[in-house]
Length: 334
Image (cartoon, rainbow, N blue to C red; front, side, top):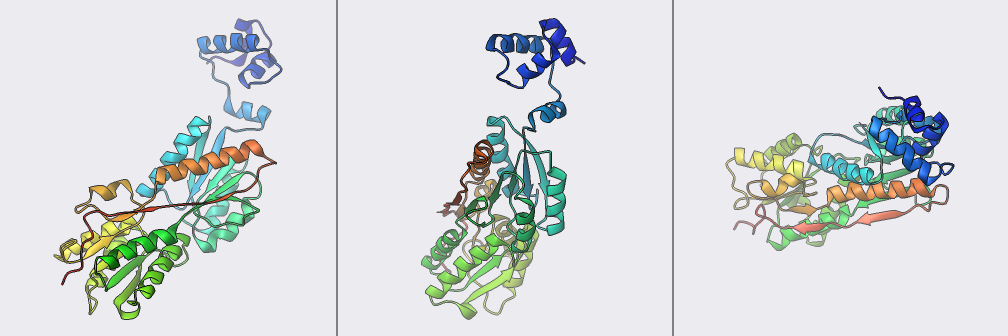
């Protein structure tokens, strides 16, 4: 293995000069830096990351804490984060918390000293105290976590308007018995999407017995179970709005198992527009969120924060989403 001493010997300079050249120090002239880097490249020398971080007090790594790593939504978030991080010259250290306070605390402790900044997605309202306790130590961007304006950068999806748009779409198709499969009770996304659903059905005068609600957990299995339960209701809904696409896909499977046609017998709509949504049979009507771009935007905000410390001014941003009408929604059956 080629060492820094080998590069110094070949280049005819000191070990300290090689170190400064590799770390971009202004104490080395451009000619010397080019000479050293050319020798290092020819010999195949790679600086030791841990040693470099001790000298520069930088790890060139971003921490990413997500509530889960399973599913297309989170894989798309990570894809966007990774692309933006690579453009900025950073690597990722990824962990999941399952939205449990003790897991969040454990992840923060494990990342301490290993990352230069932290991107956190923790929409569970009960876990916010743990997030706030441990994120004052270094640059942080919160994704889908509402935050105090003077403490954090945050980026949230406009869940409320997205949910309102899709429920209004179903009402305009003539549906009056609409069911919602919501996410976890204390999840920020779920709370906002449920609020949008309730506002629109109340405005349309179809609340109460005409608007059903059942709780899922954002998984396909919970969507399947919820739809199966709705099929046993005394007055079966003519449309189902699931709070994310995964639950909507589970609902489609349950309806097929119950020999119901979508959208002829019952319409189904989701939220997020994960890549699989457009390839379902029928293609899923949903609310489009540019998930990969969301991850990239959060990463760019974090890199900006890391460059601007301590002059950085915290910003809060709401990302818009749009209704996408596909084959899973149609006029209410007579």
